[in-house]
Amino acid sequence: MSNLFWLDDEQWAAIEPFMPKNQPGARRKDDRRIMSGIFHVLRTGCRWQDCPGAYGPATTIYNRFNRWSRKRFWTGMLEALAGAGAATAATAIDATYVKAQRAAYGGKGGPRRRPSDPRAAETRPKSMRSPT
Image (cartoon, rainbow, N blue to C red):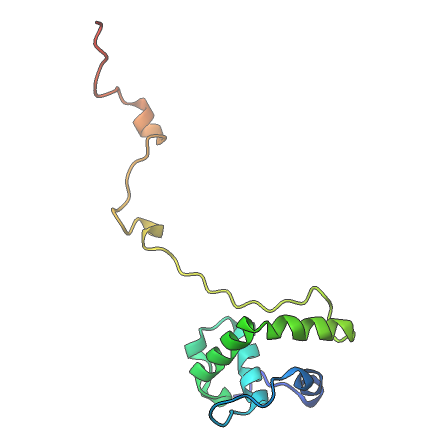
C-alpha cells in the first residue's frame, strides 16, 4: 500500500475544477480515488485489470479514463493547467499497450530462409534457362 500513488490536497485542488459534474447514472465512486488509480496505471504501465483494489474497481477506472478520453477531458484539463502555469504545454499522459503479433518470433509458419540470406545466395539456381 505504501507504493501506491495518491493525489495530495494541492494536486487535487488544481484538478477538481475540471472534473465533470452532475453526470447521469448510478452514484459515482470517489473521483479523487479513481483519478489516483488512473495516474497509478499510467505511471507504472500495468494493465488496467492489474490496478490495485485500493483505487476502486478496475473496470470503473478503465471506463472513466476511456470515457473522459473520448470527451477530450484530458486535453482540456492539460491546456487549462498549462494556461494557469501549473503544467507545461508539453505535458503528456500516455497509456500505450503494444501487443506482440503472433508472427513476431516465427510463431506462424516458423523460421524460414529469406532469399537475401547469404547461404541462399551461394547456391546454384534450381532451374536453367533454355538456350532457345
